[in-house]
Amino acid sequence: MKLILFDVDMTLISSAGAGARALDAAMGELYGIEAAFRGVEFAGRTDRLITEEGLRRGGVEPTPGAVSGMRSAYLRHLARELASVRCTAAVLPGVPDLLESLDDRGAAIGLLTGNWKEGAFLKLAACGLDGRFMFGGFADDGRERAELVPNAVEGARLLTGKTFAPSDTWVVGDTPYDVSCGRFWGFETLAVATGPYDEEELAASGASGVVPDLTDTASISGLMTGDRRA
Image (cartoon, rainbow, N blue to C red):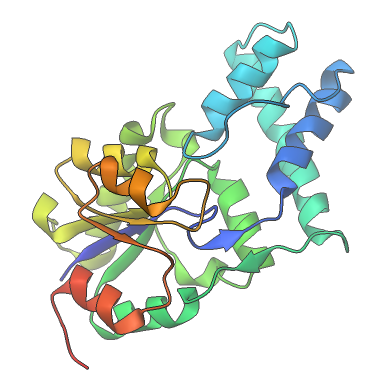
C-alpha cells in the first residue's frame, strides 16, 4: 500500500483567486487596509506564513492573536467568495480519474496543503471533492510545509492501521516547495506543471517525476503505486 499526499491549490483544483480576495477582504474588515496582500507570494506557502507577511506589510505585528483573528475573518470571506456567482473554482483536468484509479489500486489518499484545514475543505467542497479526503496536514499544524507532514502521516496510520515507510509515500504538488518538503522527509515526489512553475523549473527542484498535468491516469497511478496495469 502506498500513501499519496496531495497539495490542493493548482494541483487538485483552481479556486480562481478566491483565497487572495478573501484575505484582502479580511484585512479590510479588521484593519481598514486595502490590498495588503498584493505582491505576496502564495504558491507553495502556508496560509500562516502568508497571513503573517500580509499583516507586516499592513503595519500590523503578526502576533498569535492577530493571526487568529485574520484566520477567522478570512474563512468567513472565503466561504462567501466561493459561493459567489463570480467564482469559477474548478477541478483541474485528470484529477477525478486519477483519484479513482489510486483508490482502485489500494492507495491511501490524503492532503498535504498550506491551506488552513477549514479553508482547504471549503475549496474542495466548492469543487465537489471534499468527500474524497479523510486526513491530511494543514497550516493549522505549522508554519513551514515540512512541519505539516507528521499529522498527515499519523492520520494515514490511524485510518489504515499501517505505518508508511518514506519509500512508500508520495507528495504531489505544483511548486518546488512541495518537492522540497517531500525530499526533506525522504518521500517520493511528483511535480505537476499546472501552477506557476513550468516542467523545467520543477525538474530542477529535484522531483522524482514531473508531468504537465494529471491527465495520464494509468501512467501516473502506475508510477506512484507500482501497479502498472493497463
